[in-house]
Image (cartoon, rainbow, N blue to C red):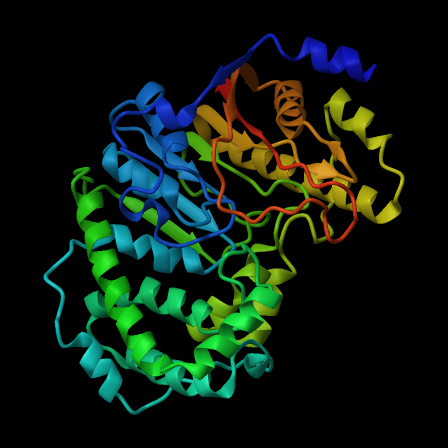
Length: 412
């Protein structure tokens, strides 16, 4: 049965290398597209490919799982109106970077931060678990300057450099896409404490500000347009509804047992001033780690793979995941006029790869309003996430995902 399902669903699948399919964006690291290591971030060529080949002037694009905001940055380059949603409040902060035009850097900015005396201390019970006391004193003055700054341009300019340095001057492993206290990070802190860490902090801050200025100039070289946009950060996609129709939905939902993005970025959220209770409330809304109402799923593939899962908690996670994302796509699609583009990878449950893309296609076609036009199979040619020989949680050999799928659904 499983073999028949897989064989019968491949006829509309086409291999592509999306990184090479778009000439307008020089690389995935260009401009603002890789300013910060946000987990599971779109490469810009994914939305750019859609906008070049399917969008028309005057259309509006929409991403309900916007994350870092790549769809928005890209839409500006193509002169398209857009709307972005995400549960994580960081979206609003990161999005603001594509709205500013770089000005000559204030050469005295770092000196002003050095001289600033008023501190900002995050409302976080685990603060000293993630930062040695010496670093808290250093960081709190820099963040005190940020929070008390009245010039919005300065605040936007300081955002990413401060976030990067706050992660570096902590027990968090900045090489890993999650908040993780590794052996490497502990050794890093011990080494920094033996150095002139204050001088290093300000030197790195100056370097990061210069890097940001260059990245902003690169992005401006793409000639981004001033277009109407709507950004909703800190919203629950299972509860939110579109107020107006959109032409194209393009998004990448979490991949089954994906990183909990709120937990991953809570260090950043605390230093930005968010309260512990609020951050906890956001974490409880993450897919698939929340209970969601059961929905009927029109997918033989979903039901077949479900029979392969024996452990009760993994079965609940599997069900919650598909109940959540399919109900979201079904509800939001009612106000999508032309196309839905859904970018997903075959994530694993206990070593079994789940073809999320096929389950999405079967369900949406089964509802009757959408037809599967094509699925592009994109080979993953590089990744910045760490890799291990075995998954530390399961002891099972860790084989990284090597392909992702861009599903194209067209309204009937």
